[in-house]
View 1 (cartoon, rainbow, N blue to C red):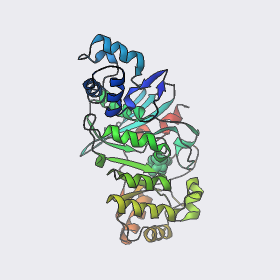
View 2 (cartoon, rainbow, N blue to C red):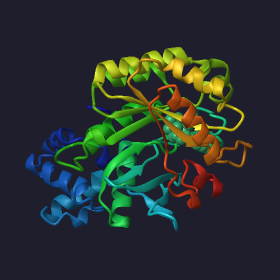
View 3 (cartoon, helix red, strand yellow):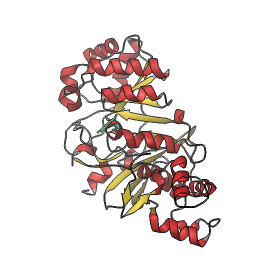
View 4 (cartoon, protein in one colour):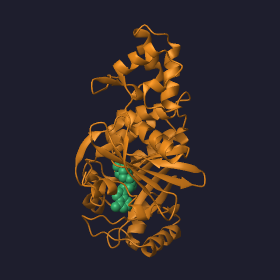
Length: 349
Ligand code: SAH
C-alpha cells in the first residue's frame, strides 16, 4: 500500500483504491462491505461530503469525517465558448493553488482535458503552463475531481479523458498511474483506458515503464520538430533525451502495447514548417505505425510565435505527399483561451 496522503490532517480517501479502503475499514473495526458502499458514493454518485452517504449509520459517517477528507475542487471560473460547446474550468485546490480543465464535445462523446501538475518544470518555449515555473504535483484525487466536478457542473457524461492540461504527466508518474487505476475501476467511474490519452514532452525512461504496464492508453508525444537542434531550441527536455532516443522508445511502446503512437506537432511559421522540416519528419517516423496531429500554434503573450490555418494545411499536404498519416487538430474553444495554461496565466496565478 502506498503512503497515506494527509490533507489538513485527514487521509485523502478519494486517492485510495477499493482494496485499500477495505483494508483500512477492517482495521478500524468496521465491516469490509462498507468500503464498497463508500467507494460507490465517492466514485459513482460522486458526493462531496460524508453526510450524503445515507445508507451508512450516523456514527460511521461521523467517524469517516473525523479521519478522512473528500478532496473537493472549487470552480473559480467557468468559461463557455460561443462557437462550440467547449467549457473551460479554472479550479481552486484545497491549498489555494489553481489548475485548468477543458470539456470538449465530440461526435463520440464528451472528453475532458485534465491537468496533472500545478505549473510545469519542462520549460517548452511556446507553452503558457511552464512560464510561472513548477509548484507541485496533483494527487490522484485532484485528477479525478476535475472529472467529477466538470460532469456535475455541466450535466454531461464524460466518457474520455486526455492528460494534456497543465503539467507533464510522466513527471508525476506514480500519481498518474494510480489515477488510471481509479478512473477505470469497474466499481467506480469505469472509463475504459482505451478512451484515455496521455501526452508527454518525452521523458524516455517513463515511456518504457508505462509500456510495460500495457494499460491500453494512447500515448501522445509532443514532438514539434524533427531534428535535435531545432527541437532543443524550443523544448529543453530534448537536451536530456534526444529525438532518436524518444522515437526508439515510441517504437517500443507500439511493440509492447499494440497501440499506435500519436505525435503532436505545433506548426510555428518560419520555425518548423518548411518543406525540409516535413521531409525530416517523414524520415524520422519512417515505417512506424503512428499518426501525426498538427496543431496551429496558439499565440501566447511571452513569444511572437505565429501560425495560420493556411500554413498548417500547406504543411499537412506536404506530409501527405510523403505518405504520412496526418490530421489537423480541430480548434475547439478558440474564443475562450482553451489551450492549456492560458487561463491560469491570465489570472496571474
Ligand atoms: N506536458 C505534456 C502535456 C501538456 S501540453 C506535453 O508536453 O505533451 C499539451 C499539448 O499542448 C502538448 O502537445 C503541447 O506541446 C501543446 N502546446 C502547449 N502550448 C501550446 C501552444 N502555445 N500552441 C499549441 N500547442 C501547445
